[in-house]
Image (tube, rainbow, N blue to C red):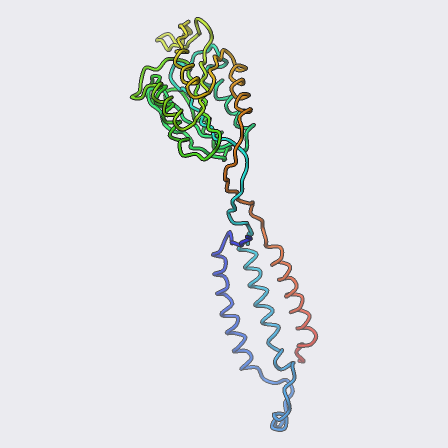
Length: 330
C-alpha cells in the first residue's frame, strides 16, 4: 500500500505566516472605499448580487493555496510502499570461523584468517536468497551476526573480524553450539553450518561431540574445514628485535572434525589453499532450497513535482483573474 511521508515536516510551521496575510486582507476589504462615488446607494441595494460579488475573494484564496503548496514542496513529500511479505527460495547458513592466534599463520596469503574471510565473502555475495549468520570463536564464542538477508551489513561485519578480538584458544564445541542455537528455531528445510578451524579443541565447556549431537537432533548439516598446510607453517612472532617468522607444526584434529561432519550428514574438507575452501561452497550450492519469508521495503520516491505543478497552475490563475475579471478600476 502506497503511503506518503514528509522529510521536513517542520516546514509546515511556515503556514502560520498566512495568518497576518488573511487578517490584512479582511481589514482591507472593510476599509476599502469606492472609486466611483454616488449620492446614495439605496437603489443599488435591491439589485441581485452577481457571481463576481462572491468570487472577488477567489484571488486571495488562490494565493493562499499557492503558498501552502510551496510549503508542501519544501517539506519534501515522499511516497513509499509499506512492508510487504514475500517468499523466496534459500537455505539458512551459519558460518563459524576460528579467530584464534594460530589463524595468523602465513601458509595462506596473506594469512589463514584473511584468506578465509575473503573466500567467505565471495560465497555470501553469490547467495542473495539465503539467510546467513556469522559466529566467531577462539577460547570462547559469540554471534557476530544473526541470520539475515541483509548481506551488505554482514559483509561489513566480516571486515571487523580479527584475531585477538576474544580470549585466545580453540573452543570448537562452543563455536558449534553457538551456531546450532542460531539455527535450531529455523523453519528452513536445509540448515547448514560451515565450521572452519586450524586446530584442536582445547577450551570451552561443551565438547565438539556433544555439540554435534545437538546439531544432529535439530537436523543441521555441518561442514567442517581444517585449514592449514601439511607439516610446518610459517608463523609471525613479535620479539625485541622486531617481528620474526618461524616454522611451527600444523596440528589439526581431523578425526574430531570428520566425526562432526559424519554424524550430521555433512562433509569434512582439508583446505591447504583458497581453492580447497571453495569446494565447501560448491557442495552447499547442491543443497535443496526451501521457501523462507522475507520482508522487503521499497525505495522512497520524491513526490514534490505534482505539488509544484499545482502551485504553478494556481499562481497563473491568480495572476490571470487579478488582471482580467477581478481587475480593479482606478
